Length: 339
Image 1: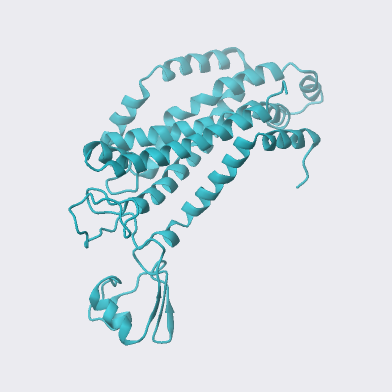
Image 2: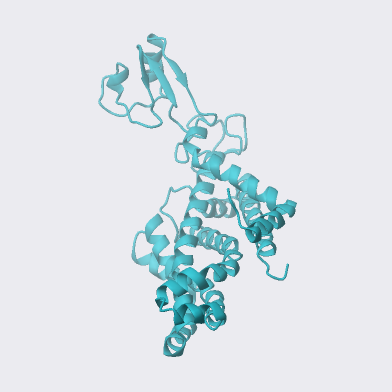
């Protein structure tokens, strides 16, 4: 990878901050593992060798008739009936390390749900008998993917809006600032709750609703950089040579403006995760049954006799947000022009 001398110094400065450097690696490891959640926590076998053929139930649905059953329904591989059919053909089965998905219920609990941690459910179960560890793994993935998508889309809109205001100035800047003052003064959380109550929220609906307000965080930073950069000598020279405004904005000024923008991205990411968790906690977030850290926090609040619920949610959120904050601090120091 060929880096310019400036970017190489930034990378070395980021790497020199050991807390941020190891936080980045730890977060990447956790995120990559969560992307393969179906291979870690699943109530279906990863692979089955049956009667000379290979089957992959974690990736594809197979009816009972595939394994000698009577009904054309999806096979329940934990049922004694299917297990007897597999044993009759000396089938070989590979299970995930955690034999539960985020929505599968443990019907063999020896105590009423929520059940405490055990060798079967390492972090216990919630009040519906679902494995907490499986829901934490899937919930971590949903939270990070949601926050990453929201951060990317918000950054695109915010950078474009700030670039237009800062580059053109005049009435464009004036109208944009008045709109931002009005729009940012709205009670965002209440509006999110109201909008979410009109429709059945899902991942994309919730993303669109939050995108209405999250794009404003970068506008002021980008606008200030463009206001400063539009009067520099190289910009005047490019305009004198007849270069189009769009090319000047995104080829010459934007790379310099992205330096300050990059330092804000991890903090926007943490804010998106926090907002999603708050909405899920209040019951206005993802659909019921979805793997949600906020819903796990709400269960911990409602089941004080089961402290493993609240402690699991708190630990995951604290670790995830702390890692992102440490990464953001290192990125801010690396891109700081004073250093």
